[in-house]
Length: 472
Ligand SMILES: [Zn+2]
Image: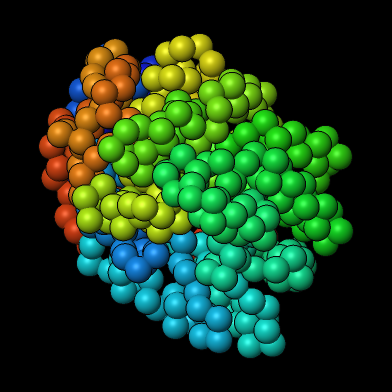
């Protein structure tokens, strides 16, 4: 069905202007003044911004961890994402050593199929480099369109890969046209510090943060950057939390290395003191890397502003407080790591970033959507408002004031990490490929509507000109 969005203020990563949008066959067909089209439904966006749909490059839906499974699956997780102004997610497909990658990817397809209400894609975790893995990787890229690989430098004896594996993944990614993502924390030293804390009887949630100090994130980030330089490859550091890591990324970028950094809303507005909440409530804020001392927040905001960090992911990985986080009572290492962030990512960046003058409106769009589309092979199908792009749009009220709460959020989880936070701005309606998923703050989407997205190789365009180099 054809639609015209009238009178809105269109905002892209580069421009802000008033214009109408004509949507046909799920794509943006025309942008102009006073558009008219026979048979088109007219939607009035007066007083609202029209943004390209948010892209969340970092989600863990329906993911097993620490003997339990995340509360939000691809249905509740993508519904919450849509309410928050996100129209595409890239979830992490976990792999098991010795198991064909194909099988892991199949498992993830089955988790999403029939459930996602918005479009989705997968990153692939690399836990080992064997002959079998090296043989499969080109197929993963060509057939599945998975062009980003995740390597964990932490979670010893669970997800952690050794440096040799990271280096060989970087080399393979360079050859094949993929982007390597790292969880950068020094897992070996963390393993020692956590064991020591438990032996000393230090079992409360706060010790989760104290045994993973920022130096260990800075060290691992620097190591990953050096290995990237040696491999002549490309690197994306997920969930950057602290000055030490920002410094290493900035240093690498100043050398001209192809290194990128993501942070998350929780690191921009929450701090380490949340882990000290009484009655074990600190467990609600246990994720890795941990929350830091408050002064790091300003470093992260500045890094977003000056381009040392480029993207915002949610690291959505939700566990109920009751029954799940509680598994770690008396032993902080047994608290499932993660928090519910998928819904509030875009609004927090707008309210705390744009409204408080820390970043510009166009930077906001770049950080929550456009840059992510470019880095992960989705641009310009996703991530912008342009003729020919998918009509993934957010009609956003920039002035409404509201309070974030688990009472009103759409995630399946029993608490919200930003509970009580006053923010300004909220998505009113959200469209995916020209169809409303959220209309006037009501869910009108359909589980199974979301399509799997094959992505282009790193640094290339997704539309017809696959081989044309893209300047990121
Ligand atoms: Zn994560």
